[in-house]
Image (cartoon, helix red, strand yellow):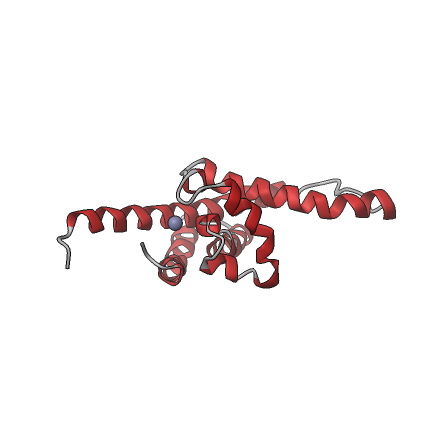
Length: 154
Ligand SMILES: [Zn+2]
């Protein structure tokens, strides 16, 4: 399997190409910026390999890596967390639950209001960034698995 560093190197090396393609397609700068930030954050912090307790993406969270331990317990390695469609949704939903658990006491005890409007204009480029990073990760995992099975043992 490729290491977390290899995944990150491949994903981040392709980012300028994705942004250039988006610019040539006429996407506006705020959309490209939202995509680039989302793609970079997803590559660094929302890797499918968060399904491993000890992984490079988990270590990038520093002391907050403990937040991902229940995720690693819930999802076996390369299972649902690596699903093409549902994988990113598991991590987005998981982060949403954590955010709610953090925000709810602030709302209940300090009266902090819930956000009235979500930034829906950037939703599509943010999801595109998360999903493209995810698809590259799973694709690289699949290519390496295929090659490992096909190539003779060294
Ligand atoms: Zn993986």
